[in-house]
Length: 217
Image 1 (cartoon, one colour):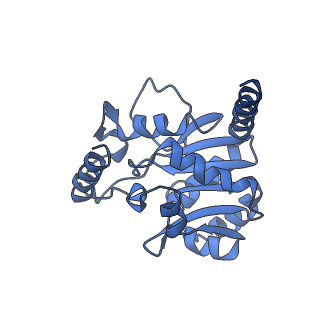
Image 2 (image 1 turned 30 degrees about the vertical axis):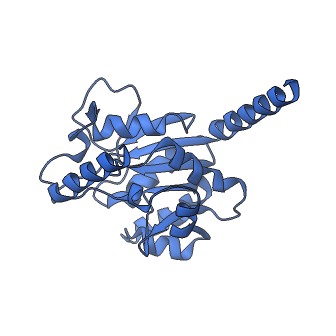
């Protein structure tokens, strides 16, 4: 029993060390034209998509911040404005990394309501064994760069892309050393690919609610 207790205590300490090495940033989204309203303020669970994202991120990262322009007040985490507005999520990642005090940073878009702390922690743990500077899941043959982790050392490459007014995250990832987490790895570890379903339209929102209901029994 004593040996088991020491082992568990050591594992807990290892988890805390990993968490302390990681900062989290939630991208609050832009104009949400396809949704027709601010996605961050859409009701979800007992709060909004934004407060839900914060709740999923907090157990995983040592510090959580929001990147974007918000109308919400009284949030328990800092809100950072985009340094370079109008260039989409890549500019949001730039704002996050340029303000981060951690080498590794977890980026999560506000419109991914089906992720869980367990999934985020699993993705983030790849940084321990990967030599790449970006670690990104791929589901249904599509990269998911807004539920991914990035090393701060890629900031110069993002700077160069934004100077060229090139806002494609996919093109940036092609140039970087990127570790791809494939869909079969997700499934083998007990995670449903639907957990990375993102909500862009009212129809997507209804589908996400249906998936959440089925996942929660």
